[in-house]
Image (cartoon, rainbow, N blue to C red; front, side, top):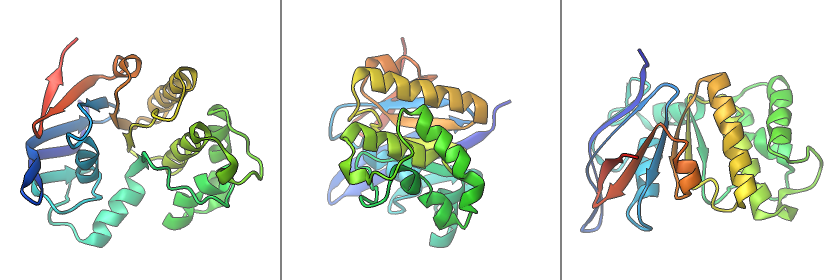
Length: 223
């Protein structure tokens, strides 16, 4: 039986007087690919921030890898993010003067991992995403190329859960397909799960489950 990686119950997130999340429930099993969709501005990024232990200011219950995120200290949450989760953000958060490989290795640097031990794997992921392992600073790369660098960076520490906020927004159709071909392959090879905010019908069709966020609550969509 697959193990539960994330379990959230009755999540409420309020901005001023607006309840963006209003009793939201969510679960994620080992190796599962769950897509979250919904109209612009309904709170999909906010939901990822809560589920990924980036935003502790919510009401409800949240277990991440068996850890009670509501009761965990800031250092414990940081360790969860560092060791258990990988993130692909809409805004790439790359260091513009570093090249692709050095940007991808940053999580290993911050976690104290020997970068030499993961350099070959990082270079392989970069290559499989169609990028070059050269000295070109990322500020000279296209938006699509920078998004692929950010995707590779999220995988370098071998997370158990990859959380992605519209990871294909800057990619053309071919690059979008190539990215998720690689993510699907790596997911099967390494056994991690994916939670991704998506709009592309082609990519949504790949998910094990599709959840639509409406009025602060997740609703399962059926084919």
